[in-house]
Every structure is written in structure tokens, then in C-alpha cells.
Image (tube, rainbow, N blue to C red; front, side, top):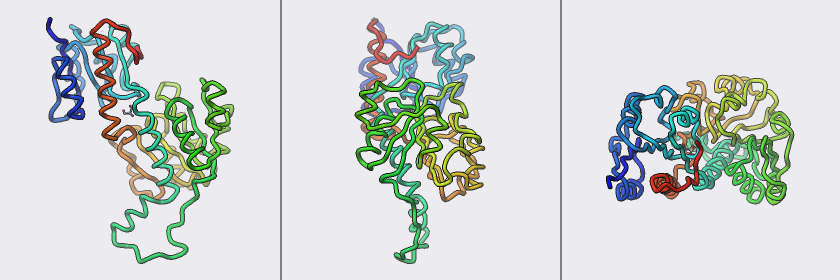
Amino acid sequence: MARPVVVVTRRLPAAVEEALAREFEVRLNPEDRPLGASELQEALRCADALLPTVTDRLTAEVLGVEPLRARMIANFGVGFNHIDVEAAKRRGIAVSNTPDVLTDATADLAMTLLLMVARRAGEGERHVRAGAWTGWRPTHMLGRMVSGKTLGLIGMGRIARAVAQRARHGFGMRVLFTDPYPPPPEVVRALGAEPRDGVEAVLEESDFVSLHCPATPETRHLINAERLARMKRTAYLINTARGDVVDEQALVEALRAGRIAGAGLDVYEREPQIAPALLAMENVVLLPHLGSATEETRVAMGMRALENLRLYFAGAPLRDRVA
Ligand code: DGY
């Protein structure tokens, strides 16, 4: 029997590409060029499945292609806001993602941003590399303590819980959170976290606010000018979730006006474009969407996507089905 054809939209770690090629008729993207709408449509017309990622905009229009051959989208990544899952469902296309395997890497990166922005690590590194360092002195580049401070989590899913674990048990932080679907009380107790009613309550009490909600129409610009104004002037905003959750222009204005102390960002509203004002701010740490970017994690994500393809084409129930 002919093996299903799978279009892999971006380069994946070699071990993943090799494993995919052993089981499927794969069409790889050796140049790693992002695919445009018409190329994604061509893939949906010619392949049985797509293995896309966050840079592929699988809109209703793209998914509306005729004739449609693809029956499965095995997303490489946990977030799937770049896929119109309702449109996929209407077209009878199954959609899966890769949860769990990137939880620790992303939580580590949230802590990296938090520590970097509070301890002025990006600024300090630029200072040393520029040859501007004249030596140790008691008042040089003072940051703020992380240990013992209050961390507010917006959303309390897998990644937020892993951040809570690190912050509470590694840094002795007090952890607050809000989530419309909170974890069971025993999980909250084990994390030593305190629930709050609503985003504002978390913003008002926290020294660091870390975002961990999915990007949906409801969470678009969840952090806007009004909510930024509710944060402490000494507080920092950390975003490893999705750029859309923050009104980037409102963030620029809040930082300019000193309404918050700084921000650590891994995701942006119009990736890979970043508001030019942010690039010039020393109290902002900017990373290029590195949340899951470890060798181990990207291989594990690829293997999880492969497992989803394997299950689908074996007619078995999908473990990570999102549509
Ligand atoms: C994810 O899996 O959602 C990461 O942000 C990579 O896209």
C-alpha cells in the first residue's frame, strides 16, 4: 500500500526528519523557507497530511482549497492559534498538537526572562561587549531581587504550573494565579499557589506577571493600557505565551511612561517584526521565540507530531487531538 504523503513545512531536527521518512512519503523543506498561502494550499491539494508550525497561517481561506486531499494536520507546537480549527473541522481535517514535551523548556525560558530583566542581564551583557565596563563599583547596574518576590500567573495550565514550581520551590517566591479553569485544589496546594479572582487582582499584587494563556479571540489584548496601569510601577511583565495577548503599542507606552519597570518578551504581535521602540529600551529583554528551543525539546516535539501522524493513519484515536 502506498505510504501517506506528508508535507513538512519547515526544517526539523535531522533525527525527526529521518524518522518521518522511514514511515511516510515526506516532502521536506531543505531551504527552510516559510511557505505562503498558495504554497500551503498546494500542499493541502497534494498531500495526505501537513506537519506545519507556528509560522504557517492555516486560515479558513487556505483551508478552503479545492480539491482537498489532506485529512490531517499534525502541528509541531502546542499553540495552534495559527490554525483555524473550526474551518479544519468543517473540512473534515483532524488537527493535533504537541503538548507536555515543551512544558519544562518553556517554563525555563520564562524564568530566564524574569531573571534577565530583573537583574539587567541583557543590558549588562551589552555593556561588557561594548567595552564600556570600567570595573566593579557598589552602585553599578543595580537590579531588583527575584527571590522572595510575588509572581502572578495569568493562566494556570501546564507551563504556568512548571513556572510556579520553579518560582515557589527554587526562588521562594509567593505565587498568585488566575484561570477560568483552575487546576484541582490538591495541585494548587502542592504548588503553594494562591488563586485570585480575575486578572486585575493578580496584576495589582504582583512584582512579576507571567502570561500563560492561549491566544484566542477572548484573550487578544488581554493585557491592554488599562490593565498595564493596574500593575505596580516596580513590576515586570513576562510573555512566553503569544504576542496577541499583549497590546504591544500599549506596552510601549507603559514602558515609556515608567508605568511598569520592564518587560521580558519571547513572543510578539507581528513576529518576526518587533515594535521599533522596544528595540531601543534597556529595561526590556527581547528573545526570538525561543520557548521550546532546546535540542531535546524540538526532537521530542517532532517525535510527538510523528506519533500523531502514525496514530491517525493507523485509524487509532489521536492522543493530542485539538480538532
Ligand atoms: C508552541 O509550541 O506553541 C511554541 O510556542 C512554538 O510554537
